[in-house]
Image (cartoon, rainbow, N blue to C red; front, side, top):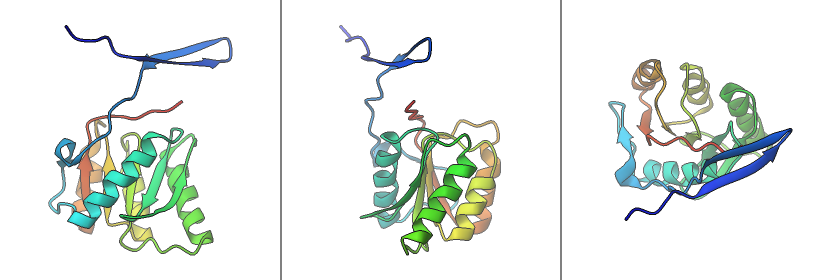
Length: 159
């Protein structure tokens, strides 16, 4: 017999949010490479690390990382573009180079603008859930820029 899913509750103004608990942590086996270039072993390690941080960070979130270090994050913004710009600015303020770093997003990219901005900042690989009707535009940009992108198929959304 299957056990029921755990639920997560949070109070909000005049009510509560009730949703399934987010108890999934992705592994390499869960990822689907969607670009011509697959992530390198080091990028893969960094992507999984960044994705774990994104899972536990307030949505909308963008995490910029290396295999061993969080470089910056932009969290709780109304758009992923704003979250990315916030993360890039934080990394710059701390003196971290983003050349060769990776980017994780807790939700899909509805437009290719985030991967374009990330590429300009030096990001080389991206992890995201996928699921946008316009995913192909982000994939196409990554292919053109020789970036790697992997889909998880799972959206982590922390209210």
